[in-house]
Image (cartoon, rainbow, N blue to C red; front, side, top):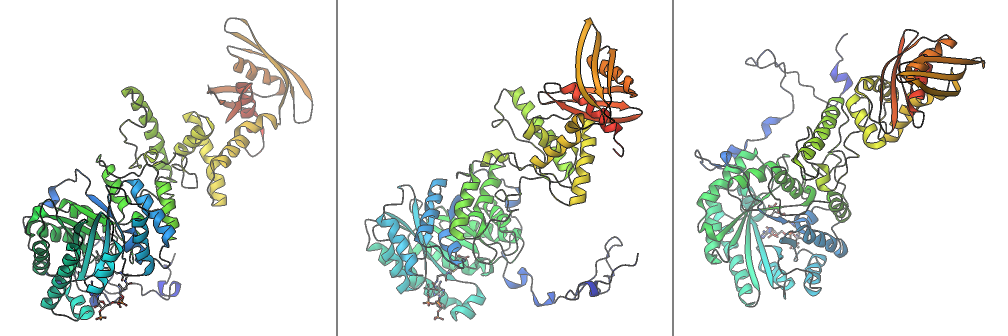
Length: 590
Ligand SMILES: CC(=O)SCCNC(=O)CCNC(=O)[C@H](O)C(C)(C)COP(=O)(O)OP(=O)(O)OC[C@H]1O[C@@H](n2cnc3c(N)ncnc32)[C@H](O)[C@@H]1OP(=O)(O)O
Ligand SMILES: CC(C)C(=O)C(=O)O
């Protein structure tokens, strides 16, 4: 078949058609595209990267949770088309407290009356628990600092978060100040803030500073500014300053950010008086990786938002980070045992949906549609239950090692309902799992391929998913209903065992023409006796297999040379299962 002409099929795409690079290996026929990639410069040309040949972060492990600081009420809020009103903010705040966060950036009080009023609301309604510190965000402008300080009047503990852009492009374009002038601006504002704090001797006021777009700022300038503030604010181990080094806009691979953080970790002055904090965004989709590598590199505190709301592609997602730690066996120090309840509040407050495939919290993230995954999960779950029993542990306490499920959905308040879903990509393992878990029907392994074919016929022809209810209907129609649907109908029957191991089956069978036949058979079991009885209506039936569970009986039978499965449910399970197999074999086209 001739290959389609891509430029006609997708006229707006500039399908790559430059010459294959001379040094490309034969297995890689990719061609250069026409998009103007030359307009962009790599990170190492945009910022002086710190020299760190002896970096230590790659060999480290994260063994405890950093201090998590949710910034949903500030950075998250400022990115919403419709910022949260007081009621929504309060709902978010209460959620954050209930989850166990101990430091919460509650707003940007100088930004708007709503923001200011919300901080006042927290103070006036005594909503801040004793062990929670409120952080408020302010630019380095005296008027705005004053407004910020007015908002927290009466709060016993506050972290005032001062920020200014320090990166060259921001200095030149936004602030229109030299490096020296920016430093002066920051020093002046920090001094102003210190004075205002000193006027509140009864409040515990600590300071945080963020050199905005840290990851694009010269490392020596960051050190100059941060060390200056550590000194100015007279930080001590008892009253540490927070230096928060944001990847305001991601610009490089996460290892570059890790190097930048480790460099600061090693070079910041009075390190024991500094809490090294990070604040990754997700422009390159690597916010979580940046945060994790930064913690390996020495960061002690991470700012982010629940489910990754925030400017542009979002702030780093604290849910993902916490559960990533959890699945390494590290206590995340915040509660995500009902992830859907958390998500519901976040979606309500942000008026933004969490994506179906969002790590841990999306609707589809514990679901397998594909056959081999389902097979592995079903086997893994069975093995998990077995192992728990062997260890004498409840299943929810036994070590978790189920293929394709990095976390036990139950640990975060999910059920197993959605783990396996059936469509045309599904296989016998998953189908059997659903019948077992939803309907107590434990299909014998030899029968599974047969039902899987029936399922595939439906899913292929409809292109649709089959719900557990529809799967049951199909099972019923395929294996249970034929016992009652002819061509043969069992009008009456009885089975007896006149001598041990000798069975007799006495029945009246109606054929497709409505004629009734007295059918009598003998055998070494009731089923073989029934099969024998069917010779009276011209049927040669041989039982090849027979199993039962509490829900049904399953019989495989060769009928006039055709092999079929049937199933029957109590109280006449086996007899109906055999009759079902016989009727299926006798039906034209089945
Ligand atoms: C990376 C971040 O997330 S930073 C936080 C961003 N968040 C927000 O902007 C949300 C809230 N902000 C606001 O509502 C408004 O910006 C306000 C109320 C704070 C200030 O509003 P306005 O006074 O109208 O000024 P505007 O927002 O246009 O501010 C820009 C001015 O502040 C200066 N500026 C910007 N950031 C800072 C800073 N961190 N420190 C000092 N000055 C700053 C700019 O250079 C500019 O100065 P210019 O007017 O001399 O050119
Ligand atoms: C911490 C502040 C300045 C911030 O929101 C950012 O840089 O993204």
